[in-house]
Amino acid sequence: MNRAVCITTWREFKANKVRIIMLTLLFLAPLVVFTMRRCTSPEALNEDLLSHPCMASLFTLLWAAGVIGREVQNGTIALVLARPISIATYVYSKWFAVAFAASLCAVEAVFCEHIISAVNSPALLWQTEFLTNSVERVLLCFGTAAFLILLSSLVSGLKDLALLAGFGFIFMTLATVGSMVHHLCAAANFDAELARGLAKSVEHIFVGIIYPYIPLSVFFSGDLFAVGSLISYSTLITCSLALAIKVLTRKEFSYAAD
Image 1 (cartoon, rainbow, N blue to C red):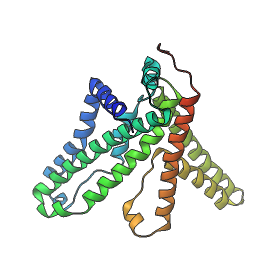
Image 2 (cartoon, helix red, strand yellow):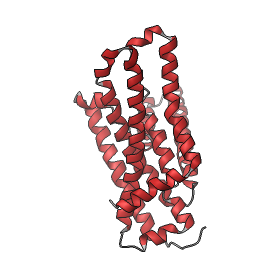
Image 3 (spheres, helix red, strand yellow):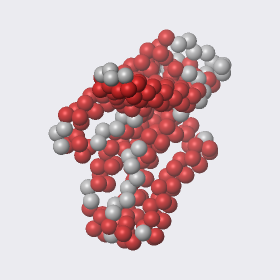
Image 4 (tube, rainbow, N blue to C red):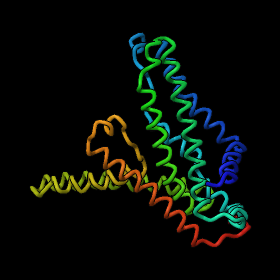
């Protein structure tokens, strides 16, 4: 990792007031919701009331949007790579900077939620759900950050958001087509289970890329499903970063904006 690249990434985010406002709203929204639930629902006092780890994906998206594309568009990436730093180190540093910052925000958010839960029910303070939720968020941040780094390396500016939207649209389309094929096969007395299995396989691949979530409760239970999740998680990070390095290696950078 390159310390200067990481610090520069964090400073660029700090200088963007729009992102700071969005980060603040994303941080406060769950706290407001759960605080209101505790004030209005007496039966909720014995629940930990933590938001789902998927919130970490939103923090990661906020930090990662255009993290490489902006430097490509502004021409600053040519200045960075002119120094004694390899493209691989640059990609790894960007990935770590995004994932670490998003993880920090996600863990701070769930910590505040946990404290609010423990105010009225002190026994909840020592519940392990808080630690499990935090670790799941950190893993989700590092997995999601790798894929977003790949998208940002493909285009300039904030066009990676359009790629992400397109990726999601393809996923929704394939899921719909798979469901239609399953129903058609069932109506025509074909092997509907085979069609359904293929559709589910495609769906799991897309979900594993967009949402690399590892449920720790299932993982520690020794379920084989958890092993598959861990393998797909590791594969996603490795392939995404390797492809990002390859893409940037083949690009020619200029000092002018696109």
